[in-house]
Length: 115
Length: 112
Image (cartoon, each protein chain N blue to C red):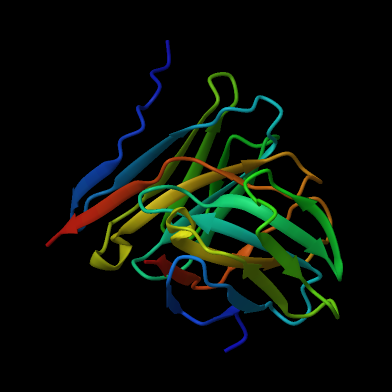
């Protein structure tokens, strides 16, 4: 499978615990994005990387959230001290920044449930 | 004058009929648009895109129409099939920007 891969697919945690999600983008893609999607809504932008550099973070990303892409390949998204409001689908996407049009290819997401 | 399609959160279509899904976008500076299809438990899947210097683009069984005057986008699916049942999102961005903004989705249900 050469698409965007996310792990785990589902995560159930108790409030206050830390969780970490992993994303493996399409191998030749240099941009990697994290989005969050709640039930019935479209995905909302959280942050993005160009290679290993994190270039922007949305205001949705509180200081409990941190994302890394240490070698410009896979990325991790960590949520510390989880809250019930963090329950959502966390989607990763990647793209090849080439020319003006940028098609994002999404993984299947990690569904987080905070109890 | 030209009518503007309303965005509907759900759409029920008879198998074999054509579907039209509407989307109103918000940013007049947006110049690149994408339609995504999302099936249950999966991430959004790219369907078709269009730049603002075009008003129509066709793919396999799909056509996207863009009306910049009224900031309206539509996706037409020809001969709708059961496998087309999903949530459809339009997304917009400004070229060379990196953030896609997604609209409210439309849930399409295909009746056999």
